[in-house]
Amino acid sequence: MTTHPTALRLDFHGTQLDLEVAPGAGSGVEDALAFLATHLTAEEAKPDESGREPVATLRVHAFGPERLAPSAGILQEDIYLRKSASEFFTVPARRASVDGREYLECTKTGSRFVFDRAARVIDVVLGVGGHMDLVELVRDLVLKHQENTGAAVLHATAAYRDGEVVLVTGAKGAGKSTVLLELVEHFGYEVLSGDKTVLHELPDGSVVAAGWPDYPHLGYGTVAKYPGLKEIASIGDDYVPAESHAFSPVGKFAVDPLPFRDRFPSAPVGVRVPVAAILHPAIGPGERTAVEPLPGSREEHAEVLRANVESAFDGANAGWHHYLDDGRAAHTKLLTRITDILAGVPAWTLTGPGDLTAENVPPTIGGPTEVAR
Image 1 (cartoon, rainbow, N blue to C red):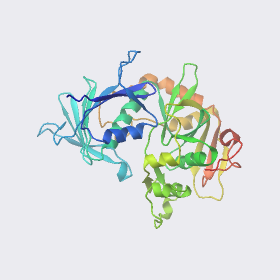
Image 2: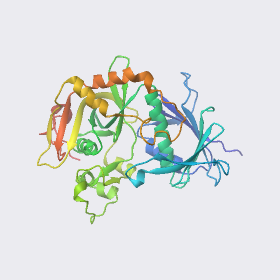
Image 3: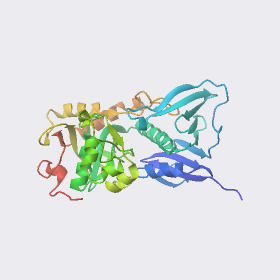
Image 4: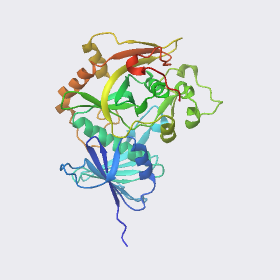
């Protein structure tokens, strides 16, 4: 009896990937799908009635010691799928190019990819603990395709409630995650996005926000605020943080995403909703948290937002594969329109330690009552 591969179609707001999983591919695919399930749908692969082709077909094979490895003697270069201040998130790799294909091996896990642009196929084997390598591949392909079709990616967390979203945007260490969890913990919001928010302009000229799957990466001050979160982050009671890390982008902890989602509920899968408000935090020491209207003109607000737009095509690790070309230039005017429209949304700055209460949160954001969890 022949066992056929499992075929799924992954979809993120019109960006589609086909996933073919061969027998014996291991549990890594299931783990990756569980991670992505908050934001991508996975259904049985069928021909798309619109005639759209998937961005790529990912074929996941059973692991073999030499499967998908380039021939012996082929020159390889050292690269990174991802390079982070955190060793946990750093993924070193080796890459070789042979006959129009790119061969890549993750040196931590042994996972391997072969990119074949001409065939629109990416072959995959996952090593031990390699499910996050597959996640990284899916996220990279989806984000780049979203940008190539006109989406803007804002460096922002996003809190969802009642069909609207509050964006919390700023640089690393500004306090985006803290403010997000405050809204969820005390005001009945759900987590739409913990790091990036994808923005689309609709045909009527409005802008909607979609969330993005990420691995929580939280500072100790944030983790210690919420009951149960230290245990999820595997931080013992004897841990003493460095004083300089209290309000700092360094010294963060990777938090297991599955129990984190149990503790802080996620927004419904696939929602894409209007932005009700924007917060610009700059959390730091202080006796109280102050939330004040963002100063300056609408044009100045648009410039602030544009400074927080990011791209999967930029940065030191953006070129770890060359399966997709950078097509952002065709959408420059659209990206400007998206930030210009968002600049008209009510916005506030947030300073101090970041504790949110009914007294310091604007009614647009907080609503009439606090929620006890």
